[in-house]
Length: 310
Image (cartoon, rainbow, N blue to C red; front, side, top):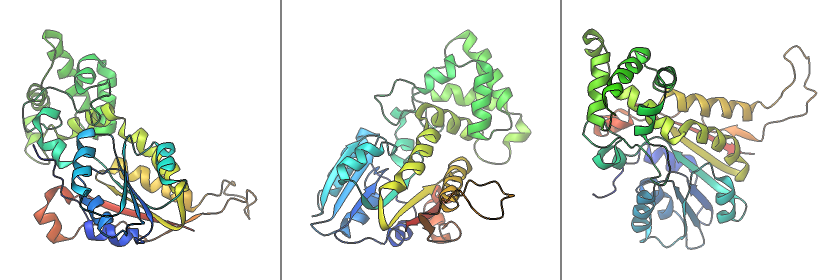
């Protein structure tokens, strides 16, 4: 199966990064090389693109796709939160950073990876197949209370407790080993009236399990806190989120960076001395237009936030 991923907000990302031909840029979620190709095409032979991905298949696909471009290239099989590896590859600082969060089209559409509730496959959901924790482990080994918590917190699912109860009953008879089995259990747990509206009944639970398996929010918190430190003056970090949990982390950390003062609110003046080292590029997040959402439905929930280093 070819690794294909339609890059969301492509033109907006290219404009937001304000690419300098001789600069150093990091695509922390290289995927199939969609956004990375856009960056590479704007770099000179002196420019450097650092393509990062925790999915080795994605990184290999990106390397193949980017071979036609003449800029310098580094490929890192690691997580975008690994700022030490990125810093070493860049030689201390970078001109721009992109994170396109979530799961790629290839991962969703490849049944063998076990990300999708639309096909039958072994429960896996690992972005890095070298990791130990799988969706099978989460579904079959987490206790009922912990399952309910993560489905509620990471999936924002109103029926989390009931879904966890049904999972516990089903696995008592035999292990739940496939995506189809889990999907049917979730459908049975959600009353028919609640299934008639909204997204697929399994969408939120699958999202929650995927986030848990890959520790997506933990890695994102680390990255958003540390990656701006790698930027040169005038350098930019652009992050695309696809659900409220991701966006809340990015928005909160960006705000902390923009307003770093830790003085109590009742203090008339700042005495901590902390000042912002970044500025907003846009006041509100950038959203995809109607034409893009119609041609690529997965873009509908995308939000792009951008900061510039002072």
